[in-house]
Length: 311
Image 1 (cartoon, rainbow, N blue to C red):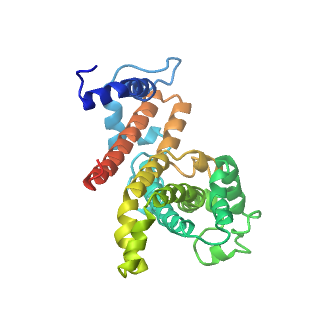
Image 2 (image 1 turned 180 degrees about the vertical axis):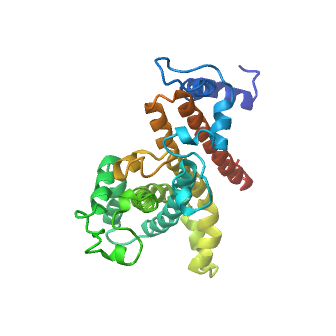
Image 3 (image 1 turned 30 degrees about the horizontal axis):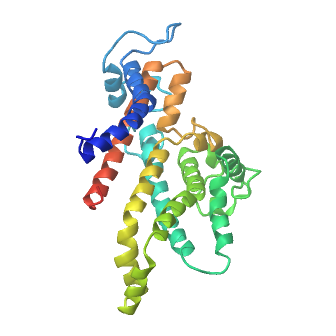
């Protein structure tokens, strides 16, 4: 060990963690890929015969659509077809929710980074939605948008304000487009606090002397934000967005409690419904494709992080 370089010694220390990660993460992923190479079997057997990449070709080309609970790819570029596709719904949900969570979380972090009276109570108010369990949160939004029960949705005879403005139908939880927007709002309401806390932690690590020097030099608040806060906090924001993107791509619990997978298809919903229908080969194939999509998204984040000179 005395002859090892610093890099070799570092890799040696990381070896136990890498082996543990391989056993916990990569082995199930390889097992899923192996299972995806077998055909579905509706009989007593768990899987059918070995078919290679036939499942991938059938799902990605739409040949398997008639057998799936919901289409993997949109059948056309219409709004109805997009919100009926598991891939399209997942991407729409991920992009919109992560965008608004980042913007709102950044603003909340900027507010919480200031010294003012009652800041502790403001922090509690911001964190409170994040502490609510997903099942409870889902039931809250389910009841709020349930006709004849929720105050945000009326009936055809007595429509509520959102119905009159044309933002929602009178049965939004039975409409894929409306239900998806409701789930996005619910996710933003809950998870913005997570983004705010991560970004706030990065802001708290900034040396306050930098702001003092900038004030002496005559820098305006906008210039201090643009030249000090934003460049330093940007890597933290990217890491927070990475975590949220991975979580959003795996959305399931909130969908199931608010409107159900039959109304809002997502990749995770499609994996679970095909598995429950004993379509094990198709379920494993969709799960592995989902993992591959997440890996591509993570690669983009890492590439952007590295271009900033931090890796």
